[in-house]
Length: 108
Image 1 (cartoon, rainbow, N blue to C red):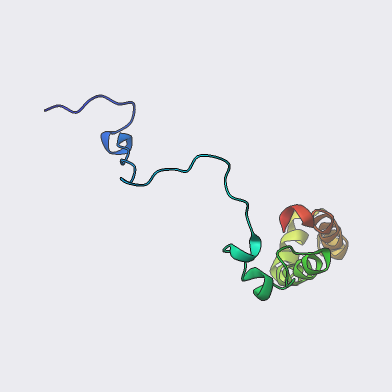
Image 2 (image 1 turned 90 degrees about the vertical axis):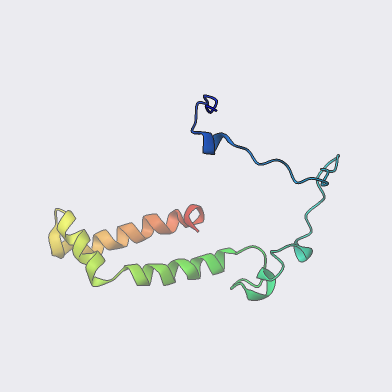
């Protein structure tokens, strides 16, 4: 018996049947209660001791990440790519840190 022609391979086009006996509830979804959700442990285990990380915690995380990144290998890369070479690497690295620090809200 030939398989029907689908725009995708037969294995991909197959959709499993819904679980028998389970009916989706009608109406709005239930309200999320953070203290009862899977995020509840975050209040005790995160650095901020909260569900959200404040500016102090994000700043500290940025400084830790920056210190890990600002190693000799990174500085050598900047010196090789910059026109000033090793003589101006400190200024370039400071500029990179400043830009990343200004944009840290979008990266953390």
